[in-house]
Image (cartoon, rainbow, N blue to C red):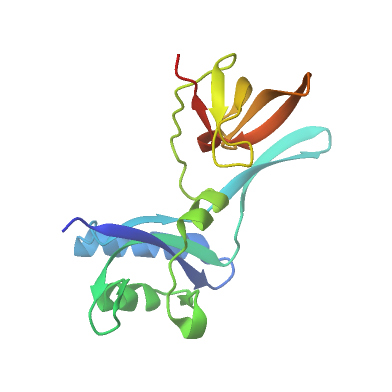
Length: 185
């Protein structure tokens, strides 16, 4: 059976995020847990500040007090659900600086795929088979099957702007990348 992985949120003492992430990585190395703890990250963003007419760039934590970990999950018959192993829960829960997992009553709840994408934890590689100027058909909206022309593609935000012609007037419309399909010739 192929391994399935889910992202979990670990709560830490404020200011201990990097230390906790490093400690978890060391445990992975020392105990050879590469298949059970796939990734550990402290999401940051680059901030540019201008002080005394000089630019200063620094990394700022997006979620202070939290570390994200991607863990293997398997079906637990006793609980009747897919979840992390008790060993991995114990290792992370007893890492110095960790106060617990995010979830009801400290019970770990994985992030949904939508949360992972929205938080920018994992970057998806999106490929589209159309480009600016191509004729496409709209899908999954009230205009399902309506023809349009691609005006702009924004891969970073997963959107495409199309021009539709309604009642003799050209109107731009922003849609998700998966809401348009190249028109068959």
